[in-house]
Length: 623
Image (cartoon, rainbow, N blue to C red):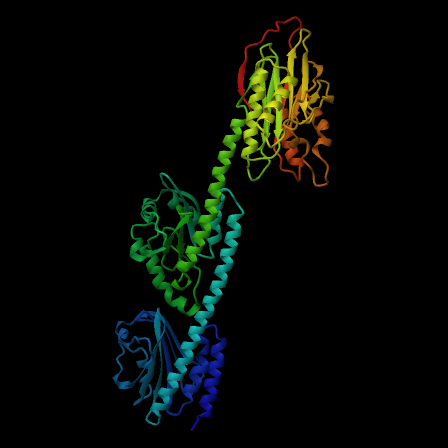
């Protein structure tokens, strides 16, 4: 005969189990129907951690609406023999035969003399077990009671399994979201140290309470970043990361081991993360409160700080492209259930390693490009008391390919000086090769006294003979001292922006000269333009990266360049070069071309002075 009352109760229990977020939420739906079973006077359940740590006990007696709940964390060593295997176990025991040392339920059961305790012990997860039992009198159908206990336990275990599964799915979704966000954050920076700092910041507090990141250098691990949920503890972690020999030895021992390792308890003895005696006492003193009030975030003492849970650390090797780039150490002060799994940490470490490796490769490329760029430009400019020279070069391409802009200043045998500036079409290795050819060819010719027009023609011939696939523009200007204290400015251009002259009175004029691009046609000749400049006058040569800097509205810097240059009257060459470069950078909302400037301020010579070549000295030019 079917018991409709129990069947209905069991149906409601399954419905409640499908919605429950905690197993304890099933208590009313479990205890009340069991207590309504004929012959049952008491229902009692216990929850155990490990074999012998009683976490809580809940009991409901017939005729009472309020359960008795005992929250504790006490050790009951004799209860270890009750720990079940993988399958639930139902046992009948006379109450009189219960030993208090192993049965904390005994005290409650003895209030029903002559009762029998029918109990089902079962495992919920790897961390512990539970029991659900009833006290019955002689009128009870014990076999039916055992069946109901087994059915109720089935629901409890299924509920607990479902909660764990839903928690894992939710955690997996959160982990995936965190990994995606971490990738975006880390990939948004190409600076090595900033990338490492972001690795640490992203992980705290989502993954751990603290994090330390080290970069692997040839001499060993180098501390780069640390963070913690507490500012005070973050400072402690920074000191540990920089100076602690225990951590340094641990990271050195890890070497190229790719698997994440967790360390806790005795494994941390002698480390700055070891739990102090005071911390252990604080843990024991607060565990009972935690059981009734839930997990908290209260502070606990310790070397590196944290809450009242024992410290655990994990170390993950950062490996990318078959080489180790560093390591990340997480510091946890949280329950074991909230520790991340190794698969997640490996995934996070892999993403961090790739971001760090990309930043390292970018840094290497940047250094290589800058080194090559330096070799394509003069490291020093000649200076005498007759002229003030300076230059400025600003890389505009964020990808840091080598640009094609170049400049130079060349002393000549007759005491004059030749200024040259040019721009090779495009970027990269081919442009760099052509830049080197152009600059050194022009320099050699001008040092020998070749006039600007002839020098450009011979460079054009060389480019055609080399079958150069790119064209370039250039302008050459010579400054020759005159007996009246002025200088003769002779300018020759090959498709390059015209130089500007800033007069000592503040007026600005353009040197009108033009000619065909270099490397396009054979047998091209170039005409020169001559004019005189006086003491205090300044000649400004530049590439189109300066004039073509464009604001958001579409206007080019070229439209305001004369006004900006006039405002620099009276300043030396270095200030003029640097100021124009920075103004163009601030002006442009678009355009990524390099900016090169060469500025020559003529200081003049007294009338009738000796015009023979003056002693030269070299000064380092701006890069």
